[in-house]
Length: 322
Length: 267
Image (cartoon, rainbow over all chains, first blue to last red; front, side, top):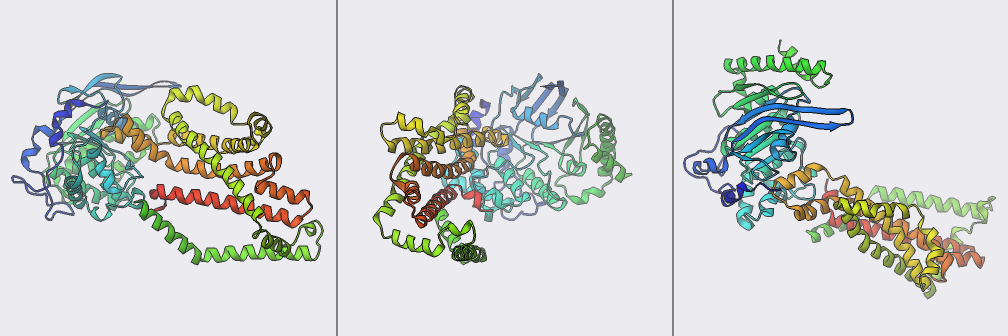
């Protein structure tokens, strides 16, 4: 079940505790003082994965027949970068995440990580789910510690130190002994990000991780996320339905067609990092946004005609811009 | 962690004792007794035949000094606890097995579905014939009362586990046995406890009825004897005792349960 190409990477699978040379801590996020940062050396290829998706297809058999969700989708996910994925609702974004994570098997085509085929779920590709999937019966600390403990990688004080550093980065150190039900929505998402990060996955798969949060919390979460990414540059696949979120976060924005999902176009977001809200007025940003909206709108209209209700959101966003 | 949880429970009890909710409860119960007393005093038709609370209280005051009364408590409690404990010992592992293994579910579940609709009380005659002693037959029916409830609650609890927990655990590197111990078990614990609380209630229904039919000890028999001997206050004393006993045992299960599921109450 487990993907064992990662086995020889175990000993280095956790972030070092102390800040190392060669990289300064990011300074854009809400918390940035005196925190552990990852030395540049451990950001080399050992913990950074490149994924390739080749003519992937996925269909489900339903009562009414075969439902094709993804058809002939090809996508490179380069190492150490954020690939954002957008598309009309029902275009197979979540299915793609499940396939990349290894929860589901492709109906056709192949998925590789560092040139080895994906055969199942594993700690080299960790998923941050739509609503929280923190274990309700564990405290914040225990949730974060679960991965390293279960794989017997690190324990005791050392593990505690690593986790507390990460929790401090996202402002949850005082909530270490609270249960998920005692945390706010934003706190739960932060805890979940940390639960994935502590395992030093090669690839993080985020399936609309900030969905359901209010606008204010959402933009704060984006700042936390950017902060964490600057510090632990691993490969990121980030599904979102908010264009501004995608543009601010991503290095590449992949736009997926209406179902069955295919890659319509990949936009390179060559905006300088670290990024923040002020980028929204930048002419390059606005040009990219206009192009992306154009593409999304085309697909949203197709999806709308096909009956997907939520695509009204995209049409609405487009109208608001005009 | 468990000591902390016990502490929290004690604090909660102390808070309940001082609360407004408690005061309102007391008022409502006191009102009930006053109306009952008045009905009995003034011989209101139908209700008037019921002994008045003062008569009942007098009878109760006599009873609590009697060894026989406490012996009735003891016999019923022993039956309840034995039947209930056996039901947990067999039911919890069976429920977990059925929840975890599809094969086991497909083999054993039809059998359970066949037996379950028969009310535990309908088993009384057969078990009196089947078991060598009345005591064993009563423990058997109490066991039946709790057993199916517990098994079904666990199976449903496991079926309702959010798939994301299982996926998250397997991504983080959990193997099959880790998933069983760290996800399925804690995730189904709340439904196990619901099953136990409901099962405890059923157990009391069953034992009281069985005692009226099959034996000459226990709170059920105490009540029945009151009826046969025409001592009406005694009937009410029996009823109240059974109610109190059921309440105490369900409450105990709930309290113990909260100690093992601290995440459920800390919202």
